[in-house]
Amino acid sequence: MLRVATAGSVDDGKSTLIGRLLYDAKALMTDQEADLKDLANLTDGLRAEREQGITIDVAYRHFATPKRRFVLHDCPGHAQYTRNMVTGASTADLAVILVDARRGLTEQSRRHAALAGLLAVPQVTVCVNKMDLAGFAEERFDAVVREFLEFAAQAGLHELTFIPVSALHGDNVVERSAAMPWYAGEPLLAHLEGAPEAAGAADGPARLPVQYVIRTHGERHYAGRLASGTLRAGDEVVVLPSGACSRVARLVGPGGDRDTAAAPASISVALEDELDVGRGDMIARAGEAPEPVRELTATVCWLGDAPARAGGSYLLKHTTRTVRAKLAAIEDRLDVTTLDRVPAGELELNAIGRVRLRAGGEVMADPYAVSRATGAFILIDEATNDTVGAGMVA
Image (cartoon, rainbow, N blue to C red; front, top):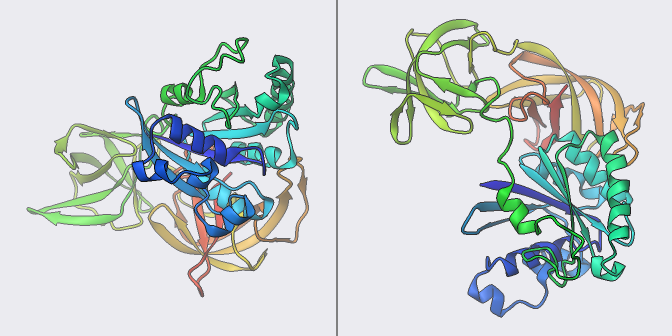
């Protein structure tokens, strides 16, 4: 399965592209095809979205081809919905960013590219749309590619692919376009079908956040979903934050005992020694375990209506562990369109900035660049239980 986040400026044709992709890939129900009046309405499901012609919330659409299953995360492009794009792109394996062939990079396009880089989306595909309105000119496509590459170098984007398309007419969406013989690459659907799965999840350091303790037939099993890496029977492991060491005696998955398990598999682990392990602890392979810490430096996207200020207290949820935390300092705020960092005394809704946090308990976090799963956390308002911040450990 491939998770694909899509983003584009207003009127760049993002919802139309997704509608065209679903329609031409025969991924619609019969009643959807019969009632289809506008391709964009396939993903813009909220009434306000259809009335205003914009995407507000993240829309998730599942579809499949004979070669692969997909989950599309259709993300909004407006600055006031930055938090929605962060939500949609944070779990994506690939981001599709639309750019209007006539306008080139807009402020919103730069925001989308910067957020994809900030969230370490492994692959980015740039669809240069409305090529029909640019006369299907190769020169115009090349100009947009050069402009995007210049900004991508600053944003830290890698694994870039560029595809010239016309979403309205279907050129290079599912089928190759006869109008652009100069383009030698694949159409969008074939590119997505062949894209590699999320890089690094199973190859990273082994991390099993414990969700639940199961007692069965005299054995204690520690169940959870592997956040990263691979575990094998016989591996020497350490339980954090206590630091107690043992070996993996058994690995059990949905199908029974297994010799090995790789992220993101859900498994239970039995250890050779009787240890005090509970929900919120982490099992890691010895020699590559993270250091439990109480102070974190992180980049936070602020999701709360009330601004973040130094001294604020929250609940910090990291994997299965929840501790109290205080916002010790706000170091700066990121301008996602220019990538400049400016001093800030607070972070308002949708703002992104670097902060320092002091936790009331130990947290076993990796840098976000090492693991997106164990390098991320959320901040929760204790009074309302609202999620007010999404963070990435530096």
